[in-house]
Image 1 (cartoon, rainbow, N blue to C red):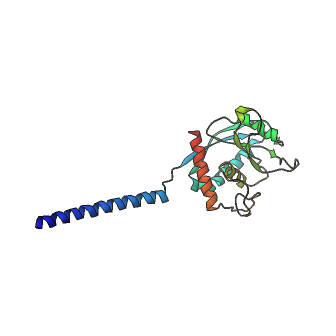
Image 2: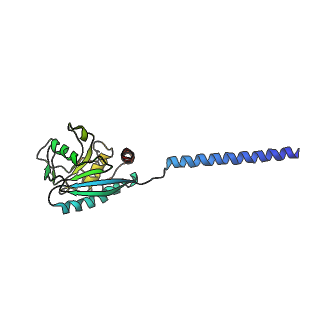
Image 3: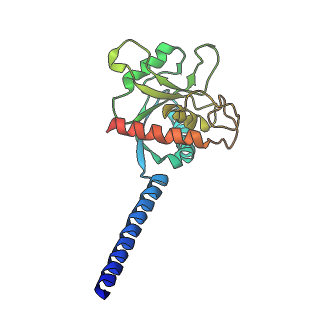
Amino acid sequence: MRKTKSLYSYCLVIFIVFFYIVALNSSIAQEKQNNPIKTEITIPICLHITGEDAQPIKEYYDKAIVKAQTFFITTTAVFSLRYIHYNEPSVQFVQSADERDALAKYVNEDDCVHVFLVPRLFDLDHKDTDIAGRHWQYLGREKKYQKRRYIIVAPQSFTVDVLAHELGHFFGLKGHHKSPKNLMYAAPDDPNPVLTSVQLRILRKGVVLFNNSKN
């Protein structure tokens, strides 16, 4: 009888320990799902500086990419300058859709986000109106350039937030936000713009998708 009770107690202990281990593993798995380990994803930037007065434009980029990084810090993206091509192409302004498309031939099929810093960029609907920047996808007929995307920024007259704004579009934020305090407002001029939690989730997904598409 004592042996039966002893065996019963032993089995009960085994069962309790087994149940505890299963519950603990389940809890750990749930915690990992809710709070996944964030691994940094390096996003190379390939910079094309057009025009003749390159130094102040490069200085703008240095400030703008630091500001952009502050918005993307929770997305795991880390921007890294891979190279700079000066005077490529040698244009002073980009005014038409064809001129925007012409930049595609300088965009290699690599893992870079290609950024063109141009002296002046014009609105397509209002030919005499300067704009700060544009996320652009090639619209022309040459198949080898189709689906190529890049960013065009005219830095000299605008804030350092413009690059971050266009990177937002590049990584999946469509349209513009209604709040002037949001980074994705049509003409952000708030000194400390913000992004919503929903926007950050979209950017995190966009960064991962971009990275996976290049691997």
